[in-house]
Image (cartoon, rainbow, N blue to C red):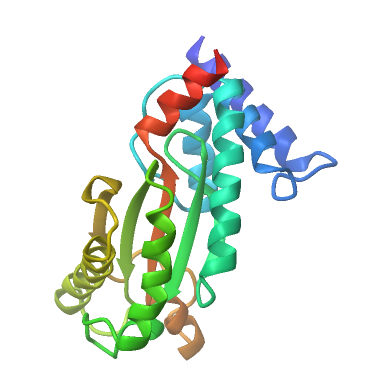
Length: 230
């Protein structure tokens, strides 16, 4: 039975991705409703793998529900729009969390935030991150993960702690500027793993040196959406 359900979930995802209205063009509310109905954490895992973002947040287990998924999708749609308007030097994208719910991925090229081989925030970067901090203080029901990455230059003994320290610098700055500690869920560094571009070119290495900030529905937001949908 579990196998049949998994196949059905995959088939449903394929239909969503290949239909006349593409997944990317579908409203976040519509995506949330499909995810909530179709497979909860299982579908989220599949979509997360496609997006390269498996493991954002903590899986709650079971389907969230169509109504709650739609409510959360609409809420995160507004968070994304706010990020696009207020975070001028970051790339803002929609991804899915561990529950298959809409999340927002904010990517900063590390060159914007740090000097080469350094983990101390530049003065210019503090202005950038202050915009993010102010935004998150208006969205206290949104959880935050921070991930640091490097390119493949150097070795793991250098890259791994550097990526951790950079992620921690970003997280520390956010909490020092009013973001609640309870919103910060996971702060990790991954060194040169999970590159988003080729490390064979200077342009590719620049893209790989990055800090990713994930904004996703907190347990409180999920519970509130489920209660509202009843």
